[in-house]
Length: 335
Ligand SMILES: C[S@@+](CC[C@H](N)C(=O)[O-])C[C@H]1O[C@@H](n2cnc3c(N)ncnc32)[C@H](O)[C@@H]1O
Image (tube, rainbow, N blue to C red):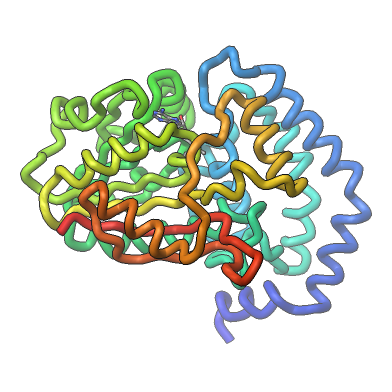
């Protein structure tokens, strides 16, 4: 048995799981103290910095996956600990017991398995989507030479492409979040020379014109990655962005995740909490696709109205009588 198949076995082994959870329960006070320091420092750094608070969520998922040996992402590993408002002590205390338990048992908790397995609960959406988007990046960048990450936050995919990649990469984000990322990439010693940064607000600016001004070739197809962003935008900005993507040449594609109207309206405790925390971060949930079933049809209609065709779709949540899906992952193409 080779090392990777041994890892896969221990990742699911019931004895390894039992020891893993016993260690975590015994060391729970350490984890709790770490989270209090970690989250407390982020809240103290507060909204005043103008840097996206929600961007840290997906980065920490990739950091955990890297440190649990599930998905290699050295740039995410380095970026995480230099971000302003992050307490490395808090992060290591919070993560330490889990990482120690993993070292001793080889067990990887379900939340950080790569690819994510089984039904996706809302709290694991960020973990589950990583593999969906990694697969889309690999598939589309095999033929497309322009890669545009919209609302890039602290995504590190552009820095994980092979050094000899013929792909030209761009990142678009709000000015303050992007400026902080550029500073922190330097601090973390990550070479960002292959990436062109374009600051723009989807709700106010013509990001496509700025992209072209920065060297994007509108005559060549592009792969747009729009991960974890559209739920924070108003409807006009979502539609305008999709139309701009549709105005690029045939063969371009966009991968994105979305919420339905359920998370915006549901009275369930989880969604109330999610709305309260994103409101507190100054990034309220604003956009959801009509959840009336079938979701796939609603999404396809919306995309067609913007000039795009649905190519791939994964519905999140159940669509049964009385139940509505809460979100999805999708890829749309320019035909
Ligand atoms: C949850 S983060 C996701 C970041 C990244 N895509 C990832 O998966 O790691 C949301 C990102 O969208 C960006 N964003 C939100 N509203 C925006 C807007 N109006 N214009 C540009 N970017 C925006 C935020 O700055 C943040 O970087």
